[in-house]
Image (cartoon, rainbow, N blue to C red; front, top):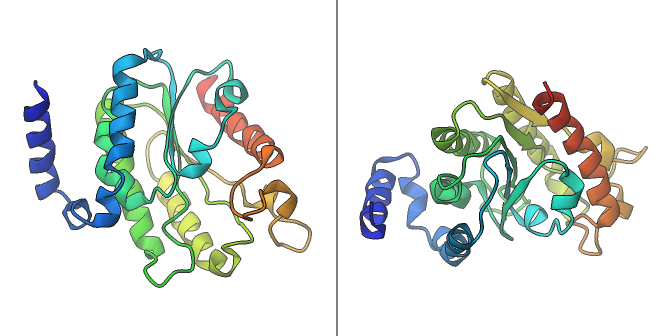
Length: 229
């Protein structure tokens, strides 16, 4: 199938999908160049068929030690800064379909930030379910892992709503086949129940190397439980 036919098919499917309300929004379309970069990588890079897809927002993109941290697992890194569930859901078919993966790990943390246009926890859960379904179309049966949104000082005022979103997705994962919720909040909260700022960069949002080490221990441990069976 040529590129024109593929583009036409994607447009047709989006027009009939629950993502129609998002697909033409400027805040979604702005990420088209990032998706094209991924598509160009797919043309020039050969990935093992047993690789794990790490998808999501800037914390995935900025994870410079991901490949070594996850060894001996092979990884495909598909994160872009500012990603939300809404735009990743729109583009996920283009991100996932070229790859046969042993699993997918998703982290997206920008839908609930304390802003007036935040999504509701219920909408975040719905969009995650769409991303999950899209991944399973090209990778049926492959495990899906969702990394809980991390408590951060910058978005601490929104933490009760963020936490509700985490809880809804956790409940949803528990009712899906081969789908796992990776909890991280206790590791990133101090004895007073507040974010451990020593694990974050000066922006009080993104993980520093120590924070990534904590993430690695948690995430790799959960992968081992499932993939080593």
